Amino acid sequence: MNKLILLASAGVFSMAVAASGQVTKSATTSVNIESGGPGSTQDYYGSGADDGFEEYGIATFTTFTAADFGGSLTDITSVTYDLTVNDRGFSDGSDFRLVLSTDQFGGDYSALSFNAAVDDANGLDPSQYTNAVHDLGTYDIPGTVDMTSDGGVVISYSLNLTPAAETDLISAINAGNEFSLSIHATNVDDDITFSGVGNSFDPGDPELTIVPEPSTYAAVLGLLGLAIVALRRRRR
Image 1 (tube, one colour):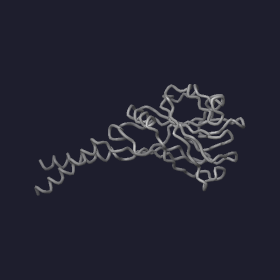
Image 2 (cartoon, rainbow, N blue to C red; image 1 turned 90 degrees about the vertical axis):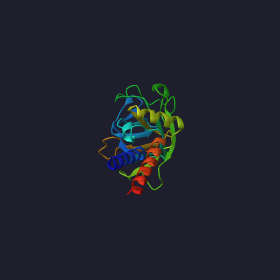
Image 3 (cartoon, helix red, strand yellow; image 1 turned 180 degrees about the vertical axis):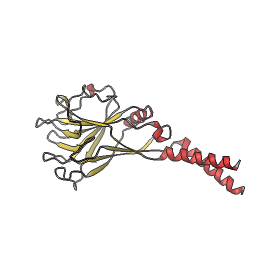
Image 4 (tube, rainbow, N blue to C red; image 1 turned 90 degrees about the horizontal axis):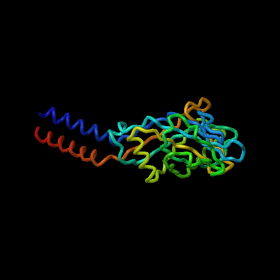
């Protein structure tokens, strides 16, 4: 009887921990979207259309699942995005934008192209996407980082998820579907350069850390576990 109580208690605590622990994973694939369609697959760039190098980068994540979060992700406390500086002599700009997409590309980005007619800075054309895209706002490059010389430096960004973006991200993860984060220039003459998946010049795949908010169910189970342990001690 006592052994059963202890085992049940241990199971309760393991479920609570699983439901509240953070999960970190690297992007599965990356590709830069240029005016002629998909281009480089190892860079993660956001460049405006002022110099013929217009492009935006997409990093796709396919390995986040509900099982990573104890069986179901219900709410998100925070999301951190780690990007590695890919130093280039033409790098310039002090900030960039990030956009979340839950489209299922399956590795085929041929329907996408940089559309300067829609926006000559970021080039994203929402009509090329099946699902609604979510603008996650602007993110600064720290003044201590020189994008032309600090190759390999990792910068961590805390993402600003809108309620709609969080809802779609949670749904994608619980369904085991892919989702993507694209990077865009904010000014037409900016060239933001980070490393994509498998970059050999400044290695460092885009990496995402998701911290879930413990579900009410997990919290109740945790309290129940504490009560069982307390009862067990009182009976000794």
